[in-house]
Length: 348
Image (cartoon, rainbow, N blue to C red; front, top):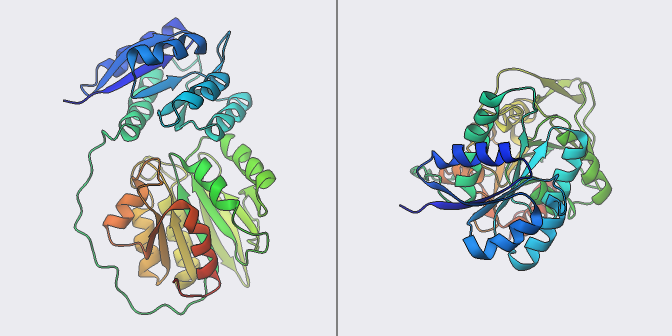
């Protein structure tokens, strides 16, 4: 049996031990080394040859960001998952780490939640991410459904985007190609905790032509703007006369996610019908699958990111295997396809 070889890097002896012990209980995971700071970790990588590195952000001597910069010079493709604290400082550092090439992150539980809660985070968040990034997650076989339906003539009036693992960087790359004059509003579900989504929206606004906001209930959708679902809140829309407004709620999670792409996609399909364009980017799990069914049933259109450019081909993969994607494209081509479809042009 192939095992994922893991290097755990954290300055806390307790965290190194608890993470290593919990990972070691999984039959397909093997902790091949630990390190208390980035300098030691960089020296150990050629010795233990890990398949993935779990890297704390705040460490003495060489912190996680400096370590990641140096690591990427020599190991550009080695998956790295960042430890992050649930603080504004931790969120800012996490987004910086993702921009530097981190593959994923997970937020450490606070010291007040206890050992059981910490172990739950490791089992339910860290381990699935390791398996997905190391291609150890089982591939669900689905018979492909033919993507055949009547010709679509409806003008696109809204774009709804779903993303998870690898999503912040994918969104940044995508939005750099979207002009400020983009003629319809964009709604986004990116799986992230509270605080992280606000910082992501702010970061995207500074780097892209289009204005990005963390969604606030009651705001009116406008062309040339995008709204990101707040962490721990679902995002929906409703129509009031000629206006469409955004709403948030804390209804139960779907696909273990809140926000969930399925909730957003169903909502936009109900409000905009055939004028909906859904886009499913890189991400773990199958959130967005049922929502894409709702978009297709309403006569809307769906674009999915291809496997080669996805960090994890979970969410788009489920959509593609279900036959729900009108086009399956590499990330660099998705913005052009969005622009064509919004303009009502047929793809070449």
